Length: 133
Image 1 (cartoon, rainbow, N blue to C red):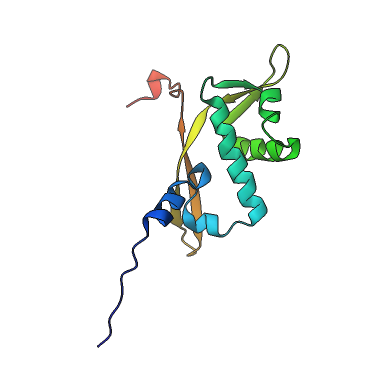
Image 2: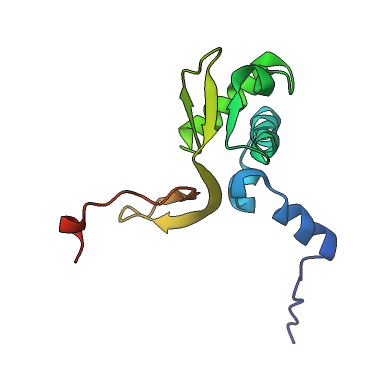
């Protein structure tokens, strides 16, 4: 008789999965190099800078770690369209425009797995009433 054991995630591994930065699923996280993981972790930590205000000066963000690491993390956040940078009176200002929600796994017609990143915008989109049903 063949017996299969059901492996349930331990409480500790479940907490680790919950803590993955930028809502990355474990499958994507596992494929990242240590350097890539560090960038995503830094990007997640930069999101904490927006807890008081959605607008943060670039110098404040750059003071939160080594300049190169912070710039790479900002590049990740910008690529995910979570932030926007605009000129301020004294320095560039980084605005939080969305927060990470989830990554959706999609299998394409060619059988390849792709991931769709979903972010929750902080401001409702402006839609012309003529375009509504």
